[in-house]
Length: 220
Ligand code: DC
Image (tube, rainbow, N blue to C red; front, top):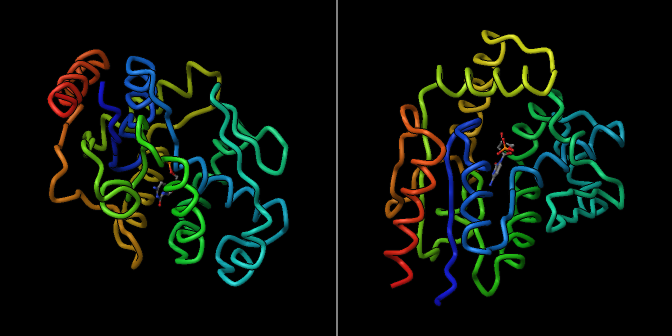
């Protein structure tokens, strides 16, 4: 069977990683969470006492960030397990800031292309279909209403025992979307040849089945 490359882009908290992981498991593909890499750079800046807004400072320490993504989903930064630390709220907002810096993007995009070499991969992010893998055989642009995204994230937090405020979450997601869509370099946008899926009124299973049908049509 032909091994293809799959790109999933879309705004924050649209459920991209959940779908990507499930599809990767079905196909026995490698899943690459590119957002986690930008989160690692934000955490790296924090650990080095560099404010997110200090572009020069962030870029100076950039190459000292050794990011390893393990097959079981563990993410290591300079040998340390940061899988949950990168989900912290401050890091989340910081990732949106540092991801606007051209040098940060160049550094991570080349690593992402290297990891995706050979196909049999599914990457999720903001610029996969437009910049990282413009030749990907299947490009999905996954969206959902802001209410739906904030509600899903809120319930997820409560389930994990993390304190959560729906209105605050909604504002943060909107702010991230604005920043990610309005930055100068590689802003979030739908690739011309991407297929848009609005998951607002769909179950997880329906979205996965939809993506699997699209994969089948590309593999044939
Ligand atoms: O997907 P995520 O929420 O984990 O991403 C965190 C931040 O990283 C997001 O606000 C924008 C940035 N990002 C990006 O600019 N390009 C990507 N390919 C992935 C994420």
